[in-house]
Image (cartoon, rainbow, N blue to C red; front, side, top):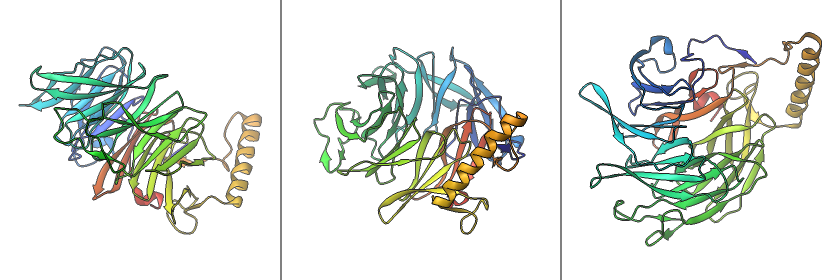
Length: 376
């Protein structure tokens, strides 16, 4: 891969990032115990204009997850098994205590859509749902147990009453996340009321693969889920339907996100986003072509000719490396990242559609994308 000249390297490596609800600030972890807060000064896609305003340094080990709620609260989790909820009060960042009770490292975190709860993925075989307790004056937790292995990712249903949990036991499930006495209503899932359902109770088993489930997503309607696996496959499943698996011919994905009810984006080891589109009820990969835009020479469905070209380019690349120790110019591909993309967040939405989104990765870059770049 050949990197497009850009000025958006924030650090040597970015392990987590998220933007504030109004897009005016960004929180970044440079793969250390610190969280850096920047004012983006109107240029979210170019960090050369950013100004670092704060450094949050309560964690003792590398920060592994960040998320910013619609209520303007920032949550951070770390390999030190701790979580903090940060609020900006009278010119300074103040942390709130979180009784996480995680036995092993935290892997990631996501706020519920209404900003009243968040779920933490951990390597202690648990997804932990946290909510504010006025009686205890801190965030307390309830656990959703995945019996066999590390939880790699957990995401919220749009209702905020259930979560989709995926882990390295190669399985993914929808579990109840309603907190009795805290949530105003029990809600429902797949047309069934969650009244009386205990937190963590499994409501739906999603597909099955021979590889780790590393990224999860609910559609904007909440009626469909997507899961990406470490073997390069992506599974889509509707409520009450069968799982449909698509195999990507490139490298595996790390994260996936719906940008609308009929389109999704996945990122990972290929250094650039890959789009999925639903046409006539069928999900397909929309490949990026040489033109970089939709239409001729841009994005299109996978074809036999594309497969042949991909194989030929791959063969040329390895032959070139064998002869020169470098990459052949014919097989090089321009990308905005030059290392694995590990994070994916919506940036700008219009109704249920994501218009812009951001990515970050091991190259230390934060990149702003538009959905139209991917032809979706």
